[in-house]
Length: 79
Image 1 (cartoon, rainbow, N blue to C red):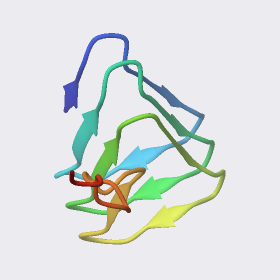
Image 2: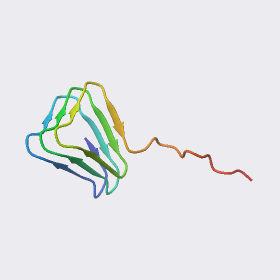
Image 3: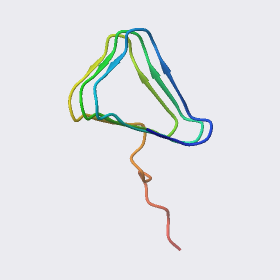
Image 4: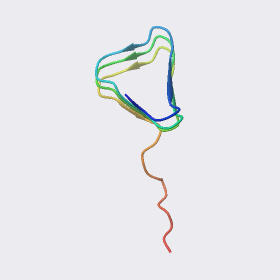
């Protein structure tokens, strides 16, 4: 688990997380996991701003969830 300043996670009731969760939250990012959700082994979750996992979600092994891709969609104009 890696969290920058102001980041937080909110877990609902009956959330199950198997070993190997790789969690990174950016500054002031929020991860919400609603009730009765399940994370299988070796899940990677990166939130730069906000990620919400809905109630009753089942996340399989080796899934990657991100709210950004690390680069802009349109390259900066060059002069």
